[in-house]
Structures are given as structure tokens and as C-alpha cells.
Amino acid sequence: MSDLADHLRVTYLVAADPAHVEARAEALLLEQAVELPREAVRDPWVREHILGIVEDIEPAGPGRFRVTIAHPAATTAGDPAQLLNVLFGNSSLQPDVVLADVALPASAAARLGGPRFGLDAWRALTGAHGRPLLATALKPMGLPPERIAGLCATFARAGLDVIKDDHGLADHPFCPFAARVAACLDAVARAADATGREALYVPNLVGTPDAVRRQLDLARRLGARAVMVAPMLLGLPFLAELAASAGVPILAHPSFAGVLRAEEPALLGTLFRHFGADAVIFPHHGGRFAYSRATCLALADALRGARPGVRAALPVPAGGIALERVAAVLGDYGSDAMLLIGGSLYLAGDALLDRTRDLVDQVAALARAAA
Image 1 (cartoon, rainbow, N blue to C red):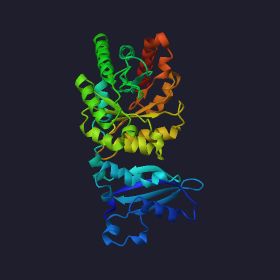
Image 2: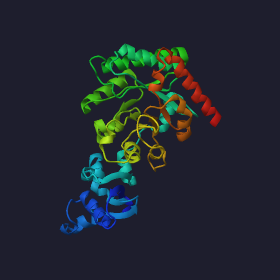
Image 3: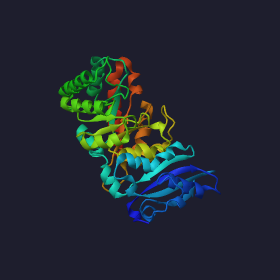
Image 4: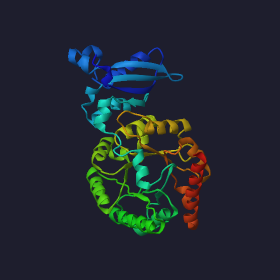
């Protein structure tokens, strides 16, 4: 067996009969490596350097087990797509298996690179220190660039730190990407002339890899200082490639992430972070989505927790956070988070500016009280 220090450890949640769980774990190991019965693997080098081991099997409730498998890093070929293939390729097709956790060796983590900017960069770009960051999304889909920019100006004047495109805003004929980005960047700049502080506008990049690269180039030329992508729509390997060359922080959106049989902290926390997301949006419990509080806290820990050589990424709880619950949300995540609040603000209608200012003041007061 090759050096276990250079192995990736993958934990799966497996549904199995206790009498057969060891055989199921062995089958899972073989499926993700050689796709052959062990007795058919006759080459000594393959057995020594490619076949991993079932490292641990622990009960996880009636008929469920946490199975940890150690795979040699050589199986990944140092490639982001092949890494995913080893972690969960064929087994993602098996309904009794859920990806639960991933621990990469230092060699694999270094190849991916992780967040190129990380949590601290969001504070530096926004000037928000000693408190959580506040963000919103520009919506709804269907508005022309000038109306989207008008909303952007309102939020910027109210004092929000980050104003991002909604993930549904693409390069629509009724709201072209170039016109929208130019108008929104102009809006935050004009607001800064009045307030003395410039909000961070974050455009959404979506499309084919070529289209996303063109959008990134245009956004940077227009002056955008951060961008957003949905890694599961574009592909995690493309996120890794984009992070290596973007030159600006990347905010990751969870759209389409529910198609993979994976626990949320493993996918949106560990993998999004390793593949290069500087901040990650996820549904906070108690909103429109069914995530539990424990899941959300574990996800935030996966993004911020210490990992040698990997920057911390910023957790961005979202998904129907009511203004009345802001204090509780801050209690869950502390100051190293960005609250993404949309619908609760838009309900104010013509009082949008005042309602947003009230939110900014509320969070500042809560941060002072906690200090």
C-alpha cells in the first residue's frame, strides 16, 4: 500500500443491511477505482498504487452507515474532473450512496488552489470590518438595464456592501449583459459620490465556457471587482480553471446543486471552496428551503474552517431570510458572513430605500452590541 498521507479520504453515507455493509463498502471502493472484482486485479503495481482501502465503517442510524475510503492521490491524475470522477463518478448513479465528506491531501489541495482571494478580500473590497457583510440581489428577471441599475443605485445609497445580479439574470435581449453591467457599475459609482462609500456590484456570468470567459473579460474591463457563477451549471472543473485566471473574487451560487446525491457541507462547503469559490451562497434554515440549522452551521464551518494552505471562504446564507430573523441569523454565523437578503426588502415597495437603511442600521447596532 502506498503512503496513506497522500490519499484522499472520501466518506459516503450508505444504506445497507448490517450483515452486508462490509461487502457494500468493498464494492464502493472498487467501483470508484478499478471497476473490477478484486480477484481480477492481478497487476502488482495496480494493487499497490491504485487500489485504496476501506478505512472506516460507522453506524449512522437504522440501516445507514458512514463509510470512509482512502484513495491514492495518483488516481486523480492531478486533474479536477478526474478528482470528481474518483470521489463520486459512478457511485453518484447508485441511490443507496450519498457523498458525505471529502478530505484532500495537501498535494491535491495545492493543485486545485482553493479560493484565490477568500474571506478577507470581501472585507477589503467593501470596507466592512468588525461586522457581517450585507448583500442583496437585483431582481426580478424581465426588467431592462436602466431599471435594474435604478434598484442598484437605491441599494448602494442605502449602504449595502454587496449588490449582485440575481442568478436568473443572463445575457437576455431585454436586459443585455454589457448594458446591465455598465449601468450598474455607473449606478454604484454615482451613489458613492453622494455617500463616500462604493458598494460592490457583482455581475452574474452564465453560459458556455466561451461565453463566460467573454463576459468575465468585459466585466473586468468595465470595472467589476468581483463576479458570480453557479459552479454546478458551469461545471466544477471550469470553476477551478476560472478561479486560476479570473483576477477577481468569485461568488458561487448553489443553483443546480440539488441534482447530486451529496450532503450540502461536502458539496457547497468543501468542494466549492477547494475548487476556487471565494464566497458561497447557500439556503439558510427557516427560509424557502428545507436545510436544517445543523446543516447550515456545518456548511459554514466547511467554508471557514482551518485547512492548511487553503484560504477561508465567506459563507453567504440566503433563501428567504426575513428581516425579523436577522438577529438570530447573525447569532448563528457571527461576523464572518455575508447576509443575502432580497424578498424581505423588495416587499417595502416605494419605501425600499428606507427599509434597506433600517437593515443596515440594525446590523451595525447588533455588531456593536456583540463587540
